[in-house]
Amino acid sequence: MKINSPDEDKIIVDLTSRDMLELDITYEDMDYSTIETRRVIWTVLDEAGKVLGRELDPSRRMIIEASPKPEGGCTLCFTILDSKRKSVSQKHTLKKQSESIVCDFENLDDLFRAAEEIERSGTASQSSLFELDGTYRLILNCSSEIVKGILSEFCRIRNASRLICDFTNEHWRLLAENNAVGLLLNQQVKNKRT
Image (cartoon, rainbow, N blue to C red):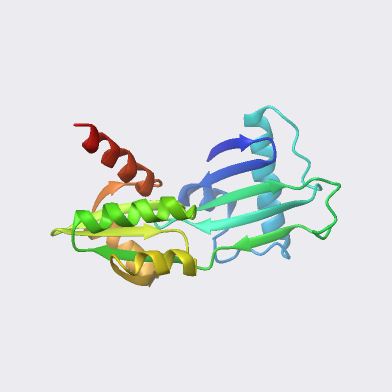
């Protein structure tokens, strides 16, 4: 379990498939209306509080976003809401990202240009990059129509099923995990300097 807090009101928790197994839940089973999911959320918030050195009250108003990871597990993003805000109901909300997308690139130039456009749009999300026989496969944990529109200029896009992700993990060579788009942009900057 990897826990970080980019600011006071946001906590991001990366759960591996092993973490999910220990918590006795799958991404597909996550539903805040069930006691099992609430138990997992409370457990994760308790652990996050210990790691971050602050008390996290699970009864506070918050938005909880869950995104599946291509290699298994998921990312939970907790946004703690200001108690003065009236626009959000008192209930917790669990938003699940419905699917990832698979993007197959025929060359590195298109891959780098796509990474730039994703970064420029501000819709960057967790991503992993693989290679097989000169084809590059980017798996993004984002099913946004904006991202699909951006990427459609550079690659072939399809929705990622568990079968495609498992096949990719088993047969393709992993080049970058979790933040492939950011790593591509950093590499491009280094290449321009030399």
